[in-house]
Image 1 (cartoon, rainbow, N blue to C red):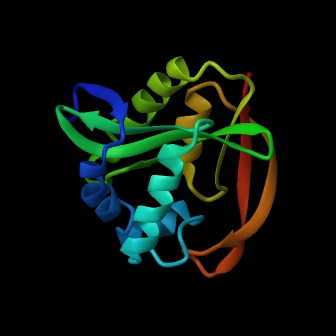
Image 2: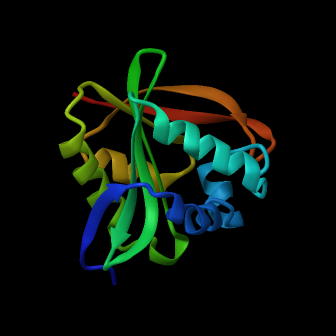
Length: 158
């Protein structure tokens, strides 16, 4: 059980472990809205480097009990700030995502702030609603991980 959760900036030395987390088949299916090819390391590295360099994005690794257990970010899309997170499947169900989200929300005071999750991703929706996000609608989009259009739930805090 992870006891201590902290955030720190993403470092290039984190790329290997983050890449492995983000290509876990079960995690990819649950997240649904993922890279077209989760095994494309070159695309992953380029995407992460671009995001780290953006001034309107806050990228953090999630450190649990001293080791990297995920990634969390706040970014701007079409003028709205959104959050996203990815946690190592080995620590699912231990409250890591919720604690990391609370820390990110302290660091990024912008409100309103939005979150999105595949509508069938009950765990991620629970993390967002426990943090105070409220459902404001649904949308549909192409989920690369599932090769289909699926519904996603849109939430807002503040």
